[in-house]
Amino acid sequence: MSATTCNETRKKNVPYYDRPRERLLREGAGHLSDAELLAILLRTGSEQETSFELAQRLLATFGDLRGLAQASHAELTRLKGIGQVKAIELHAAFELGRRLLGGSGQRRASIRLPRDVAELMLPELGHLTQEHFVCLFLNTKNHVIGKKTIFVGSLDTSIVHPREVFKEAIRCSSASVICLHNHPSGDPTPSREDLAITHTLREAGELLGITLLDHIIIGDARYVSLKEQGYL
Image (tube, rainbow, N blue to C red; front, side, top):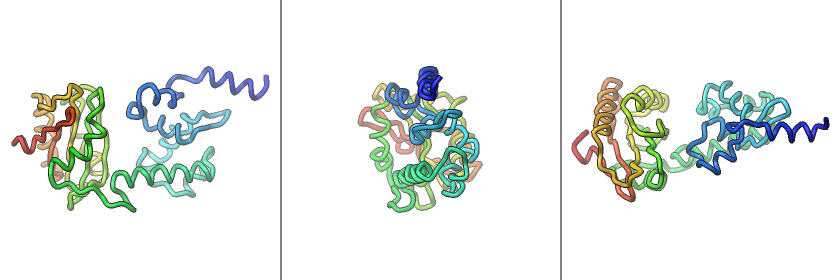
């Protein structure tokens, strides 16, 4: 069997999770894992390893996406399957991400009022059909230094755990956190579950010395700030 025929057969037999481009088109980028998004950037693997498998190996080597983003050019190119071009493309992609979130080379978003948060996040969360729980991590000057989607799906205190929120806050060396989630119904009125999650996160933050500044619920071009409502 020729190499071309082998590659074609392999492509037909690639599992669903190994076809991230198709998943992105069907479900949107927000539903893809870190490895799947990386596989799209890497584009191709080898006869022995798909781009998805290469992406998984990269994440395993550097611990996680943050570790990979901080890897040097030499560290990347020492790995089998990562040449000069792929390393450069990864550096460029991570730098764009840092700039989008207010990293080096760009003015960081400054948060003064709940309205600032809503204006920043409404374009991202206002149109989603599933609930997304997102955290913004701020420094002592209330500049956004990081952002992470903690959970996708119906919110529950057993799922949105303080451990996941504050683990990332500690890694970012953030002084405070702002939590947001959307209501796909379009009505941003807080539920009892929303209030319970806020209470739990506030108490956890107090123990760690990281302030929960606000929990903002995004609706259809509207928002509710639990701080403004007196819950924080």
